[in-house]
Length: 398
Image (cartoon, one colour):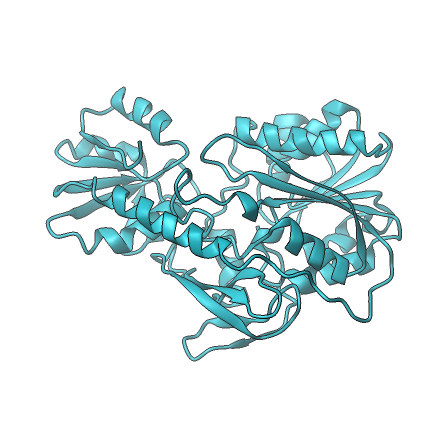
């Protein structure tokens, strides 16, 4: 989930924002993929994936402007509607707790979770014995969900740049930043300002999708290039950016997650209070992103070949659908008659030219095929739909 952008950038003739490399700060990236997406709620979140010509860091360029990104998150929030911790979030949170215990973070340490969502990590920390817990998230209902689900207090609605005004950030012993860095349009500026507000010796626990494990053949094609993921971290680039900002690496590991989910890269850093005058980033491997793109294209082409010539109800209105719609519109004889989603924050919003509706509308369309627009939850959704509707189902993946 993004926070305020304090990074250097400038406008393009397309109305998009060009970014400098978040690691080495130069404006010289090589375009490697055009990530074209259908607009969501009127917001065009398409971008160009580029690779820094100096250090090799891969990141999204030609972005929507800051205000558009903020309005998009506020309009279609999906981080504050959960009714329980998912199995995947449990695995990720438990991995973080394990690192805290193994690295001997004291149980009375003041822990601040930036981008805490509905409190999944904080709840697991509470169960493990940590009791001095704080969190902040821009999603408007996060605090209420965290309290209702887990009895968590001290959860606030706000951005990372305002966290020091709402939380005792300067006293924090551990700051957790889980599944956040990949979302930040102003990554380097946000992290630089954050570290200035933390005391020397404060630890920072970071989790991001592991670039080393990106797979276009075993996972959702182009799934790492979601509507919201704007940079793609390897162990090298994660160490590079924190090292350049004056934080020492204490521990780093990649945690395996179920097939279909991005494996997680965890890094534990310690604030030194000393920013190096000069920092030479270690170079990234040069061919990993090309392989991911080629494999994703092969997988996506296979998925598109399964779409019948028929009226379609698309079930799901996230990044997968935003990517799929421009391709479906080119299929002769195929027409989308509705897009539906269970997320109440999406219903009555637009995706492309379609208004997102509640799944209940399917009952009025018995002749339409239901295309399940999900990779990770395709089979679970199919079971649910077969029990409710007689419509033929379209499954895109084996």
